[in-house]
Image 1 (cartoon, rainbow, N blue to C red):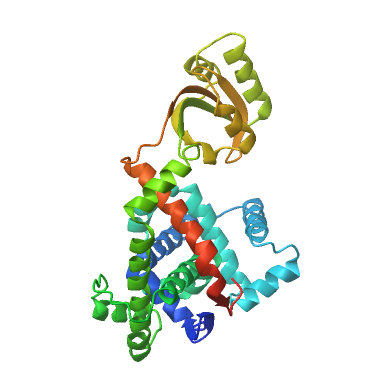
Image 2 (cartoon, rainbow, N blue to C red; image 1 turned 90 degrees about the horizontal axis):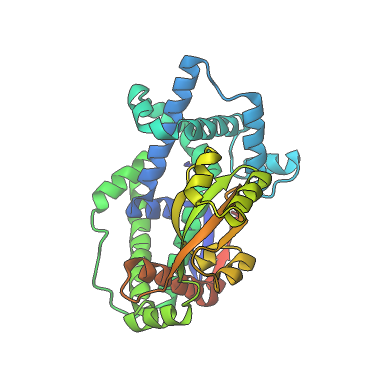
Length: 347
């Protein structure tokens, strides 16, 4: 990790932000603790796999590596090697990351128990931390989040007084940062900057997300915030989904009966219109109760669904309020804040 510290990630106005700022911000918000937990889970899974001689196969690792490169648009082997070199990750450390990722996915329901059975020495955690933070996308995600918050700071007038401070435990943060390789003097210096950013972000959100603005957002985006109550069945193949669709439409079988006949489980869902492909969403807008749709591709599965009803957005519904806040704030960020961020490090 320390190999990145001191490098500028982005600037907002005249203010420079460094990789240690990204880590400190993650510590403040508790997100770094979740990253560390997942790293330990991965190391424990790798220890178990070695003990039981069930390491990921060559085919599994090749598929995981291909997915990794595809997500980052690394078409050639040279591009992948260049990406790793730029992030100072050795190829063997990348492969260990892929092994941990495959095994975490394989044993996702038992990772906590595995971590208890195979506790990891701190030296092993330290050795794997840099590659995990880079290859998992944690550093990039935290950097984008800090940049958004830093832009909020720039948007507020410099004479604005911000009273609340939810980040007062500086000694604990500095100790945690020192354990990650950030010197105490540097942590104290940068912690003041990061705290100001986090406080400004909260204040900016408070000003943008007023009750009046949220209410207007809900009224303006009624369709996107409308939920379709439905029963659905997911299939691996399109052919099986089409056969189920025929049973529902022509034979008028129930969703539950079709699912049982196909050895599947039906699921009761509430889907927002903006979660659906536009072609399906437009048709569902005028759907009647009992109408059947599909196949719709979700997460690589072919889904058939039957409409049970629609739930219009209510302005006092916490879930609707949360979605309205998210969409409104995201739009403000993209329109007003992102242009002021100047990236110095390609993510």
